[in-house]
Length: 307
Image (cartoon, rainbow, N blue to C red; front, side, top):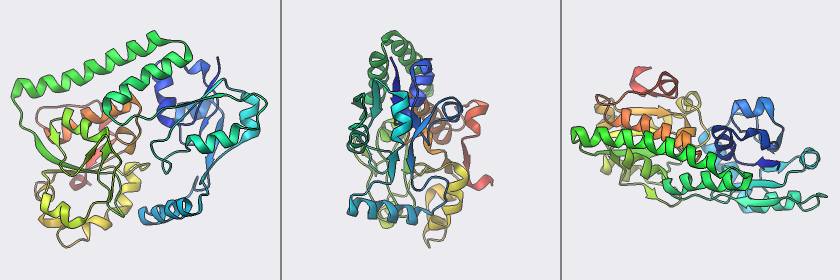
């Protein structure tokens, strides 16, 4: 069995379960360990370039209007691999190559692989997708073992809240800065597990543009900024889109110095393990006196006021 993963999240899951020997044919955005061992076959016209949040939004908006995808498949390389299965997605055509584009790319291959679209909407869906992937590769038990380990980590976070009777705090997590996007899909569930509530979020649904005035009225206690596809250093460059707004200094999160910048892969990349990382990090952000995180996770976020 040979599988290809056109989603960084699925690639991460495959490695987490120890099933990487079955994998070849990945995307340019997959985890570093995969890029060092496997063949990238999915590329993007923006690869290796820096754009601001507004510029990226414009590029993808124009792409959607014209119907021309910014992603493409190196078909000759994929033909050499000749996978039996390709994992793809239809959650977001902006973030990753979708099933329609993938189907067009493989239609002329001598060996046409099965396409399995993985489309989680909730946190539970993400956990369930672990089994989907494991079963497809023929290693269901590896998936069950991985899920049990992740559920144990989530339970530890919840147990601390029960033990100390912690009250929920109001949280806002932004998936994009310019324009401002709230968080959707599984992220509100992560926030709930971590001891917070995001009243501007869209649970199990797409993130949408949110007005700055609405954010000011909501006035969250904790503000988390984790734009899709951005590491912390990239997000920092775009922070003036927020800090130069006249009401910025009046927000409770700003007054309380509870503004955090975090790597995207803990939130908008739906691999089960990275989302559990995100729950643990959110718990530390929301209730810092009750939680600790690993040294590895400490490198994936920081308080904006500590720089």
